[in-house]
Image (cartoon, rainbow, N blue to C red; front, side, top):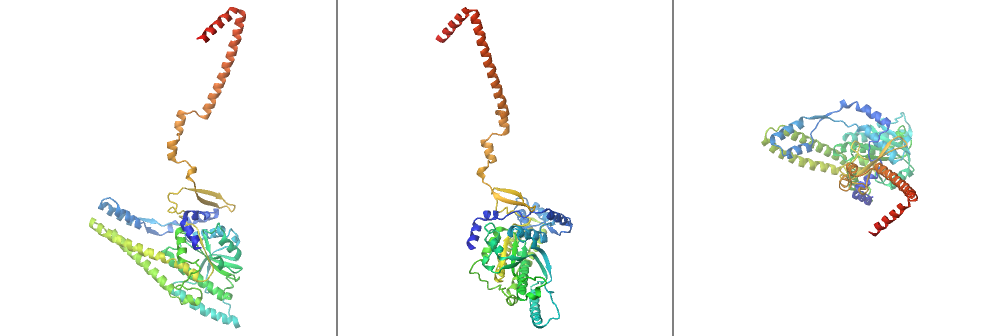
Length: 490
């Protein structure tokens, strides 16, 4: 796997093009209807200031006079916009789940897919009164459940929640087929050796931009809840019979979008597919070790404190910039802003580097897992990756009434550039002006043929007339022959 990841890094573009339907916005007619309904709720969207770091950078670095800069700063900070992103939340999760159904499992388990399942895990099949072993097991479960709830509460995690999708009764051979399929190896990642049982049940977690620091804590909490839940189901299966009557081994599948290059880099850094993988800090292979692991709280507190601090510093510097009223203040606040930006970038890079811990926790849980990547919802095409590279887009309608889009690189040698056309080839106007069209040429040839026929006929007629004259007046023949002889002599 390490060698394969290195290969992807050296060929990001070709690797990305192996992902089927690289445009994520592939809607069925029903999906479009649902999207139209959600579009009508635009008025409920939150207003946000239209101010980003790059905007301030461009103002400070512009060549205009100081007063113009001050006016532009005030104008930018005062501007508002409505934040509209229709492809987020459950809509986006369902689109990516459909990609799993179609592009990972080839609709093999289409009828079994269950989406957006809400559960309250604290109220599970508690049939009282109980006797004998059932009562003893229930007491053990209740005691451990209370410990789990106290642990989760300390991390700000509610045990009830949602599973984005579940696929029950998956045969191990199908998982092996997926993980060894040449056509899927660029977007489905897993360790075949983890799947030794006959059947499995996948708990799917769809994550929009998995490694973004601002949502990392939320995703970490979700992952911990998944791990704890699966550990409890495995340890006390009888308590979960109502929800999961079949006792198949559980699998965690994380489906994500975002930058492909970042996704591959995070997998490499985490070393979760390395034989010598070792995680000592975030041990999560049993309920006891999860509860007693203090690193989870340290991680969440660190991120929350750092993000709050960064947000406060950002608000403060923007407030100071907004109050600039003179060229002297402009220069002073520009220095403050540059210091803030340097610190901000240092902090954000530090947080980004730590988001890889999510994969380490997943690996150390000893729960079989699969990682799946699809292009980003709403901004599917990585323009930065393909900058300056010629690409073509093909559109094909599938039998299930979807449109599939596939990007491919095209060979420039097979095409003529505009420059070549202007330098080496005549324009239409030039051809019309200086050359005959095929139709005009055909007409001229036909006219020439007719003229030749007419000339031939005329010559034949003249020859007949000459013979008639020679018969009637023989002396004319003698005169004609003499003139012909003199002409040849000359």
